[in-house]
Amino acid sequence: MKRPLRHPAKNPVPAMHKDLQLRTFGTLELWPSATLRAKSSAHARLISLAQNVVRSAGHGDYLAVISERGGKPSIRKLRHIPSTEQLHLRRWKTTQRNAARCQPTPAPASGYRRALGIHQHMTATQPSFRQPERLVLAGWDRYGRPLWLVATAARAWTRMRRAAERAGIAMDAISAFRSYAHQSMIFRRKLQRGQSLSEILRVNTAPGFSEHHSGRAIDIGCPGEPPAETSFEHTPAFGWLCANAARFGFCLSYPPDNPYGIDYEPWHWCWQA
Image (cartoon, rainbow, N blue to C red):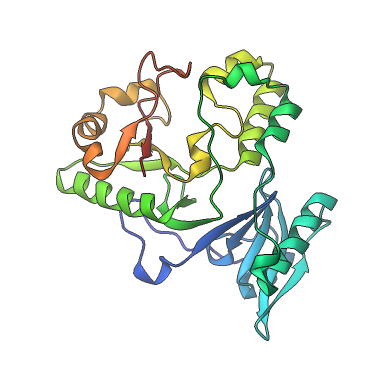
């Protein structure tokens, strides 16, 4: 079974892989096949020979593989593709023939909020964020997963992490880009566990309002420290970030008593364009 490209979080992305990109298109994501592991032996060879894998943005299901034949994309399905995803896949193929005929805009975040029962007054104090159409591979997170950011934020994160290493500070990434659909799935899982919307909205912003949608936000941790816990503020890594992150364009988005009604998140930092 094909193994993905994986590198220790402390090492920069090799130059030969810096051109790997994630593309978002409606409810779909197009992943470079080299960054994914085949989920079944039946599909391993197809994925190993493909340039890209089509995934559902919410569940992360592998839907199809894309190969180049004669300069045109050839799509082979791996499983049944729901009607909405089929529509977006057809539109994506249109952009490959004539980009001006169809722009790869994401599905409206408002639809995800309506489905979850999130009303406008619940997000009145928060800014909204759009999904970028392209993100670049910025390395690997703590769990060996590809870390996707917009190119400017990826470069800034690499520079900042290297500077921290030179100062004897170890940092790793917990997560970066999340789509509207992924954010919606987080809400659904928590609702299924019995949490109320008001509880969830204190720690997770609604689809369309998360800085992670922008591809500029990154959750940062350090070895030996649990992810996304306020105890991170007592680590040397957090102290270094407070003193130095601004030099690289990063700022702490949710300090104590922030105006957005979000609980304090010392691990969440966003690159400001």
